[in-house]
Amino acid sequence: MAVNGAVTWLRRAEEIDGYDLSASDSEEVHVLAVDDSLVDRKVIERLLKITSCKVTAVDSGRRALQFLGLDEEKEANGFDGLKVDLIITDYCMPGMTGYELLKKVKESSAFREIPVVIMSSENVIARIDRCLEEGAEDFIVKPVKLSDVKRIIDYMTTDFREGEERRRGINKRKLRD
Image (cartoon, rainbow, N blue to C red; front, side):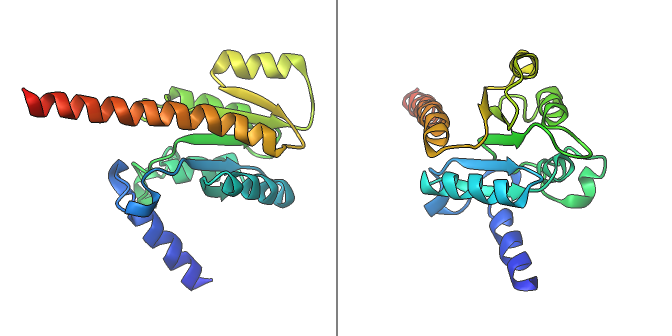
């Protein structure tokens, strides 16, 4: 367990301050998957990895906030500035719902632009509308299928690539001036 913790720390340390320092992971979409159910968490993690995503899986909204550095003890966790391209979260979790996590992320100036996708086993229209109105990118009814994940990742990677091209274009223009 300590070895895994060290590996996790090293992997996270390569990304501190918003810079992904490992060349092999530089074009992967990094997804933060949040679900209190171990089985659902493993399923979504496997589906995301099939689509070549880098996945960090946590078991609660509170842990997700800690990972992002948005909890009350943010200076204690040391992971501020980690690069996350997408958050996918279960709606119904003890302690903090996915909706509450969505609101916290969208209130944050550092993370408000990160797309958040909500998952739920209940197809409740009012819940779906509320999440979408609060800023969720999408709402998936469980069980999550590979086609759901591919659809999300397709528009994520399109946005991701366009963003990279824009950044490269800006840099090239600055070099020419």
